[in-house]
Length: 294
Image 1: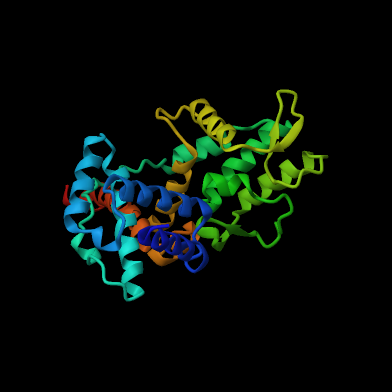
Image 2 (image 1 turned 60 degrees about the horizontal axis):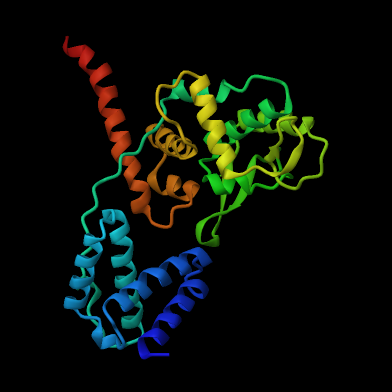
């Protein structure tokens, strides 16, 4: 094992154990950094120079990778250098590595009327319709990630309406169920007679339960009900999370509270929603305040 390989292993262990990052994060960082080391034939920490990083970035850009993807590699290199500096190891200053400029991603949300139509679209009394209504209500009530929703346990305290969720980085947070979500979940659970431990079960065409619901099937059902509700755009589960966040901010919630409810590690991730709410507020100002000037 070379010197740099040893430092890399130490850093990945640090991420997992001390920073409480998930195994998936460890794997991703390991892949990004190993590719950098191999690409630049780096055998020693001293080989990580500005020239080496610059040459690596040129190689990345020639691979036609998206700017977002290129930034993951650069962030991994910077964070490795920060870790080594903390250990008093003499390395290239991380701030000498500039991050690629990434254009602000467009976040699509649903307006309140569209959300109402979407959530109300499953209106049957059969098990599938009741489950689908409960899924849609829970999404908008909690702002959960798709993977978090699929992993919810069956036995919740619906009286309290609070759910402890283990999200990214294995971090726990509490989310809350609206009265509509609690009612939809109760109606759905009353129809079930199985012993499956997950809240949202996967169903066959004959409504037989076969384990927990999969992320792909939830994506399909959200898309199906969006079309049924006459929503003229492609709708995916993460848009319900976006809509949850913007709805809170428009109605006066502070950014830190929204960050906590969404489970964002950094508030800068949450701040992207303020860009959306500013546009909403501008429209409100234009619609209502301008009336006085007519």
